[in-house]
Image 1: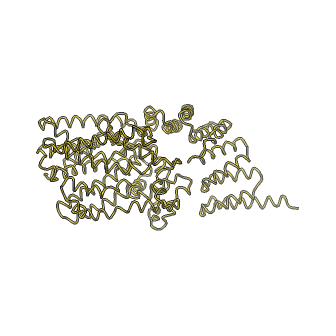
Image 2: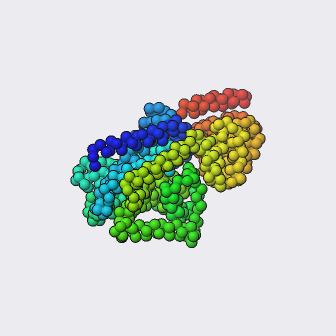
Length: 602
């Protein structure tokens, strides 16, 4: 490799980055960006990062104590390095999406460069080196990096700001593998130390990095022909990091729920009430693997929220059909490896599929996540498929110039598709309209489209969309949003009706939202006793909601119950001991109670 080659690769990737992603920098934050960034107080304070070491339980329960989703704290603790970069963005320019997304693009460029270097190193392995043609030695790394960089399936991990966790984890993961092989080739302690630090960085960006030490060993054996014992010895410092993520996950589970059992820890990422969810998730994943492979080959109908048919039984043909498909692909690779004429393609395919299987398995196997499938989960696994694809392209019986032309044509086609796909992300309304067209039977896209219409001031369209989501599947968020829309339009009777309709679909994780709007409707209708009852129920679910506590106090004052007001306010001090608003409210209530007693005195 010439010294100038890395510079040319970086320059080429930078140009592609400007062309593809420059117009997306100012696109608004969407979906989970609003929950984990805009609405999260956790990452915005530098003190919370220090509190991980001094007050771990306090940070673990901070979100839930503030009336927010508990997963906000879970994400912060499991991915502190990712959130540290978000904190830097926040300190520099608040919540302006431009800086956040610019850093995402830079990370994506760096990842493409590491893909280029990884492919180069793998082609130097003993098992594949003798079968590599001279032209392929240069073409495979370049095509791998370009295809990885421009493929439209990668867009979610770049434009979707919160998915920096995915791309930043991929950066450190790739760096760890590359530095490990560099250390093996050069016997350099510097590369070895960098490899270990990179694994730690990947693990503190996202949990899917847990397979990096194992993959380093397997690639050493499969690509470089190293004996298993020697490969394990070379990776011994990497393997020592394996317990870190399970221990961290257990600590978070214990701090939040008090549970450290295996079931409690594994289910920390989702809130499904169905006890069979984990089983159904595992049965569905072989089909999801094939869907990822299909989208990498032919990226049609990309969807931020795909509707995946759930496999509910082990006897389901969809499960065994997917397993058979994976088996046939594996058998084909073994067949290619055993034939001298196709050995290069076979070895590359084996390494690519090994990479894919090891990197996709943390998110798509036995650990149940809230969604059965998400495009960003294919970001790191796609590295192996692009190296495989570039190798297969270079194995075709054609002159190197024609192979190069074909590779550039493929790169151009993917670039155009990515450029066009970027438009969908330009507004929440466009994004969720696209999802609703592709997942019409799933309620969440309709809920998000209704919210997008509401934010745009399109009240009638918003209400119609939420009503349609109820036709698809009745959910408490739909009824809660319908109640809120009608409160906004000053139609409390209609808001009350929707609030009452939603009560029969409890329990859910959104009961407090529905009850809060129902209580507000009762206040507008001056149904004080009913409002008091509803607000008290909200506080039993989320006792840290100070706004609900104040609303409850207003209702109690309307019923001439100052003693009840003081009781409610004093109960709030255990959750907000330093709140000046709460202290002022208590002082005012005590003064009112004294006046009330004087008026009733002899």
